[in-house]
Image (cartoon, rainbow, N blue to C red; front, side, top):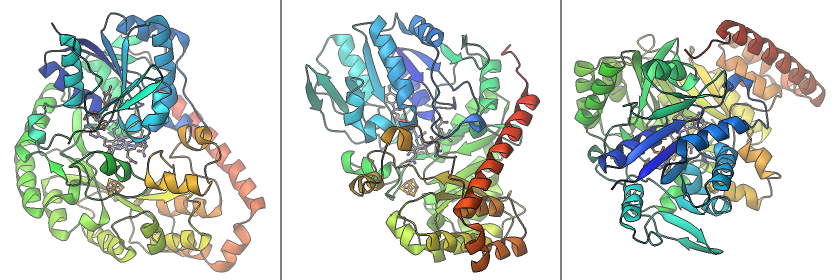
Length: 507
Ligand code: B12
Ligand code: SF4
């Protein structure tokens, strides 16, 4: 006997590394898996503050048709997708009374108690061993209530089992599932759910910025799991408290990564670049970087991009990765004020960030202008500290881009706990669940971030950052004007984007 499980990924990007990995793991255990991707039917640029994408009743009905004969339904969710998971679950529960529905992914891991209010079975942490064990128990008719990683709500009582150590030998895990055996995706232009094939995969990956740049489609994967740090705003600040043995970076062997890439590129030649989405791609020792880079250059050779923390960047690692094909690097800076970096529990000082920026700059034009991430709208940050960060960016060597995030207090993180204590979260739905990380507040200083990120001339940004200019332009009345201008700009941008993409059918 095998268990039939439908895995649902409600994410706007259909790369869904975790769900695809689980699918392969379950297939290896001889279970029957159907993957259903339900990306938003609008693009990121259309998000507004307090935006929430709701599935239409006919979509819920089609999902029901696809899962009704399956034994188990698994839904993956990040915090911003909570309401999507709730609507799917309550619809499916109302129609399929006795069906086993499991929620898994980062949100149930970080905020299980809230999740149990909506779904009585949760799988916390990495599920590569936990989920197959659960299905194997179901298959044999054995009790699942005491299984590690699972939380249950039964007859008003909550069962919280401990979390097991995550898989240490990542090479033992299969590659992400891109077999397209039984995969389905929600159509963008109508409410159909389409059977995935190579063309559909290409089309739907192309639609999201996360899997496309400069018109190139790239394949997303991770070469490692974990991060040695625990920044206060990040999931690791909580996971490390509940999941044993996850302090170290766990790495796949270079051979294992390269063989996955060969397989997927061989099958889907439309992947022209690779994205390594590791939390800490530069965190490996130089010896590993050397071995990885040599093999990657020899066997794959496609341009790649990755994320990096400032303290992990060295000349030697940069040289090795650039020589192997690294074209883009995105660095988590977050702030350039030592007090704020400390508040975030970042492992970095402003001096180290400066060193990293200058190291990276030496590799232009062999690499594209780097992208630096910053977090704005932090209520713990003073105006002076924001200006300190702006002045730091203003003196950074150009060219570069900025990726700006509006701070979200993700439930379960240390910063969230602090914000709750300090009464900073007025409305958890509006301030967290619906909050779009890419929609910052509109005010003078935040507009300066945009100007700096778009390469505005240094003499101009220098002038705009002088005390008298800030005093004149950083005023409530002007902020209202900026908001109006921004909304006009957004509308124009949206209009042009829609005209360019048109409304093409999926086939
Ligand atoms: C790669 C990545 C992305 C990629 C791909 C995302 C994806 N959907 O797979 C991209 C670039 C698209 C992305 C985008 C976003 N991301 Co992101 N991303 C990551 C990152 C760095 C790695 C995730 C990963 O692939 N890990 C490896 C896989 C194997 O692990 P996994 O996905 O967690 O899956 C395991 C378990 O969670 C569990 N599991 C997962 N699903 C299910 C389902 C069931 C039924 C079960 C039982 C178990 C289960 O089992 C899996 C295997 O062990 C994480 C950081 C992190 N360490 O998790 C952030 C992270 C997940 N992202 C985050 C956020 C906020 C986002 C964005 C909303 C905005 C942003 N700031 O980037 C967007 C929107 C997402 C979207 N559009 O789909 C946050 C989520 C915080 C939260 N509380 O929700 C994280 C945790 C980073 C952080 N700030 O702490 N992201
Ligand atoms: S360095 Fe990045 S991944 Fe690691 S804890 Fe900090 S924010 Fe999270």
